[in-house]
Length: 334
Image 1 (cartoon, rainbow, N blue to C red):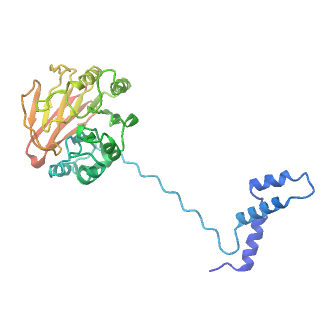
Image 2 (tube, rainbow, N blue to C red):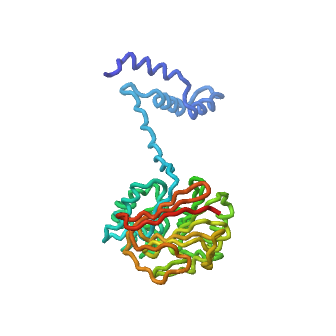
Image 3 (tube, one colour):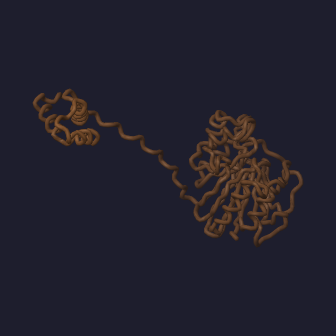
């Protein structure tokens, strides 16, 4: 219903008696030394009053509320890291089967590189990885593999996963339930003196957690066809000296667990790092070649590795598709 004319006039008069806006008030004060207020100032006063009080035809509409900020991803409540590498081969349904395993396991999801095959484009991530492992995007902490950068570099990977790490170089760390967790990038140098190596050294030096796990794509030790990657040895030495407990890798499309060992491959129950290869997320599976020293479990099946993180220890369980294979155990932090 329209406001009555008399009420409009009364409301306007009461409003106009209020002090005028700051800029106009200063203009009026500037002319107080003279005998007359200039026409320009009178016009400014009139404009301010009309702006302040509005016309008589309709009330001023309120401004729309600001867009609320996005809701942050909640931190998982279950003390679990779960994941695999070598995942979305779009011509196969295997990655759909391993993603279904994630549906029933809480915690953070890690990826061990080669998240997509057949050309890493934003479209392929959305069309292939997205409907399977992408269902858990909000709780995923990824790492890249060589196929994530092919054929055109890290652009599609960085865009899809929103580029974690310093200057988009895809290495970073985070803390979870008392553990320190490091995600590295084996597509760029991890050798002594490299930017990533120096970052890792600083990160480990500032780490106050008793238990630490690190993950990336290419393994130092493997009984698979891709074999060991000596390019990551310097980082392994650094982590061994800093007391890192567990390393997770992909690249070879199989599951393999090593006992705690030194960077030279010698068993070391007291200070050694336990390495897992979990390249079982969906890429075509590989056969084992020569079983390496300290290799304690091997399987060529699809599945994910579940790590339950405790205050001073961890439990591992390889959860396979269709329960075709099982490996489980417990380790103590250094």
